[in-house]
Length: 222
Image (cartoon, rainbow, N blue to C red; front, top):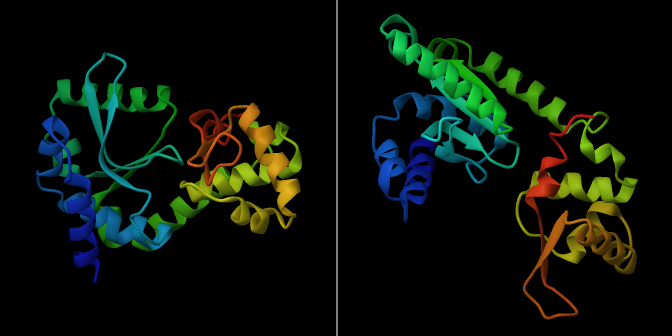
């Protein structure tokens, strides 16, 4: 079952991709598969919000790649094999890896590496680590969301975790409010550049999507 899901996921990832990222996707991804099978799929339940060989631009201006990324949660996951990342690594490569990790942090992502040995011998422990991280990210007490009015905060939290467009009836379900009340909340968030409309005309739209500014509130600490 996993092999079929992974094959479909990989095909979707390479569709329309070219250049260096395509080369990265076509290399041996055995370690990445172990990461997906042992930790990420059990925790997230699907590959829907994950991206393989996620491309970022480092502080030096070069392209760097994360084994797997959850863009909306700003998490970069790595599988590190001891032989290739420690035992036989050169000094230059060691320095590059440290600079790469710093770039990921400056860009606002959490770098979350696992060793191959952990993935093979202690997958449940690895899963618990990720659950703990998600739990901390999901807390709003010290995040930028905390300063929003309560209904706006809750709508934004649902929208961040959903990571796809949503319609007004869905927002009503989330907040347990009537359509007109939800419409006003969404309008306020649009004015704050937290949501943007998709489809429809100048008066009504069909769906709403969270903006980059809105998503960043979950990771901003106050």
